[in-house]
Amino acid sequence: MPKDTRLWMKFPISFPDHPKIRPLSDAAFRAFVELNAYSREQDLDGRVPVRVAKAKWKARALKELESNHPERPTLTVDGDVYVIHNYADHQDTIADREAREARNQANGRKGGRPRKNRTETQSNTDSVTGSADEGEPGEKQSQSQSQSQSQRQSQRQTDLTDTTYVPESGHVGDRAGERTDLSEEVIVEAKRLGVDDLPAVLELFEPIVGPLKASHAVELAQVILRRSPAPVLRSTAYIARACEKPAEVRRIAVDVLDLPGVVA
Image (cartoon, rainbow, N blue to C red):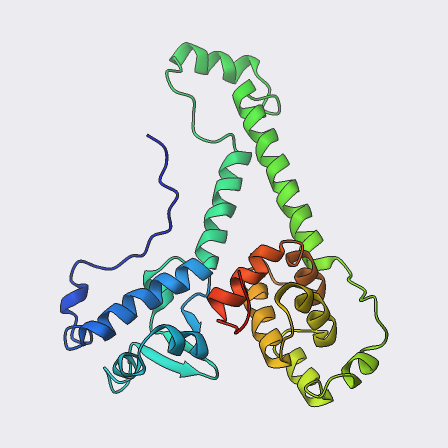
């Protein structure tokens, strides 16, 4: 039977009877379940943009989740995002998946699981005549595949995080001066949020999704950067690589940020 590759959420069987959950209205209960699903699908680690949440779920339902406990409500607001309480304690996070991948790679370097039906005689013969460096053919193949996969992943991440992107147009100040929504204050704030060259990012996004406000470009860039499996060293370079898949960028603009006038 093929392996089920769908994404999953985890809730304890007693979840509906939890003191914070039982009093919720049907709309708030559904909103909470869908918030978890959305966060997992989009790799947000329990941090859903407020603007997206308000577009998807009723304000009354979100308010219930913000007020269902005096100290530890299900939802809290942190700047422009809703934070799901104890999300990492229950749902799969980016860090969880990275840890699993690291364990799998480590096991692969060790040759994976032992071969089945190995007789005691074979085991003893291997230990006497076989060099520790030679190993079994299956082990060497597994090690080679694991090392090759690790090298490819390492090279891909280097490409995504270290590639230098040089915009075709002139100096940042020149580009910023052409727009009324690109003041130095906006650019500085974008850098604080991890977008190192907002004018260049706008030049990357607008051919794909159409005219954008600077604030929308920052939101779109942040969602793309959060999806990186490792810290991004040069955000504009990473976004440039992401824009090589314009359909995916448009899908994020529509589904994640709900930007007006964009067709996926």
